[in-house]
Image (cartoon, rainbow, N blue to C red; front, side):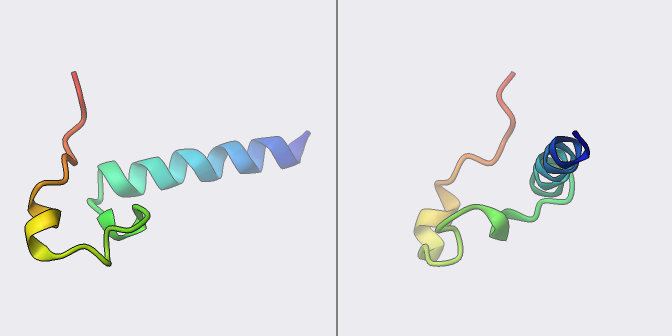
Length: 47
């Protein structure tokens, strides 16, 4: 049971790292994009 809790907490931590701390390098393929394509990535949270 603790295993599922740890996995869930890691997903929450990853989501917070991307959203709050703006660690976009965690998004798959983001580092390999050109600067023009990175400018077109929608990183804003939808309402």
